Image (cartoon, rainbow, N blue to C red; front, side):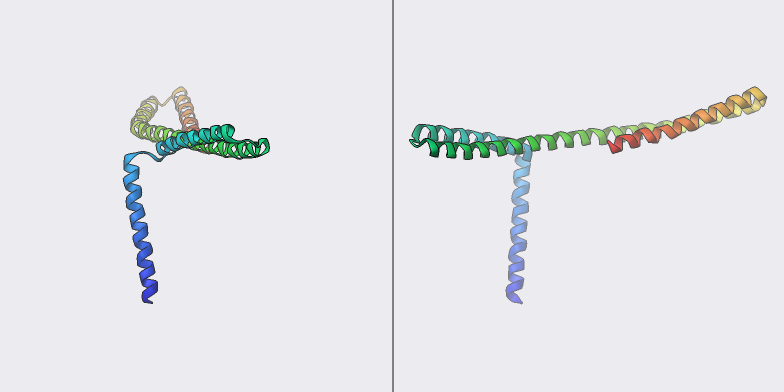
Length: 162
């Protein structure tokens, strides 16, 4: 039991240390920035390896095999950079969409009481006159308002599916 407890304590301590070190590193730079810098370093190292191979290799078959291996590594590095760029763009678009939705919700919730008050005043004015033409206008206004209210959530839910 004691050995299991000690192993658990060691794992817990290791995780705590990793969290602290990760927090320290994150405070210094964003992970995307670190990845880009590392990519530049790796690209330079691959270029140096290619130069060394071409200068020092006497066997053309061995040179071709080694270059093919390095080209594969370079292609893999480029794919990963491309994937990281796409992920970053998607995150930025998501952040913009969330900001836009929050703004729309604030604007709509701020305008809703004013719209309700205006609508109420319009109905009061129309029913005071209480003639057929006013009632038809009120009915048309109510239908128009209902249609506008029904189309607003549809346009915001459309952006959610995009």
